[in-house]
Length: 92
Picture 1 (cartoon, rainbow, N blue to C red):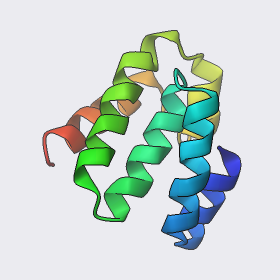
Picture 2: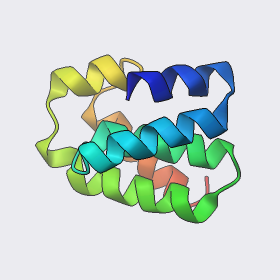
Picture 3: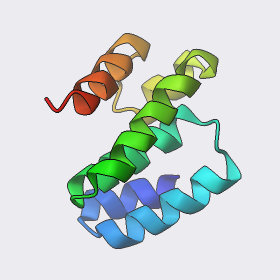
Picture 4: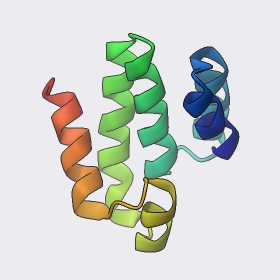
């Protein structure tokens, strides 16, 4: 996941998506992997795949640890991550 996040920050979206897809295969129930995959797909103009990843992130969110969410979601907590995914899904 971290490699995918790094590539996304560098703007290397194809590499980010490839890494995040691998991470999602390994840890399909990780809300953070799904969230970052959604963000990379959103930035790449792949709305259907982004929406699927955001829905998966929301489904996995209840099981995620608060510590991991704060560490890997830009310092935001569970409510903010939930709201952000919902806004992306609604097109905002």
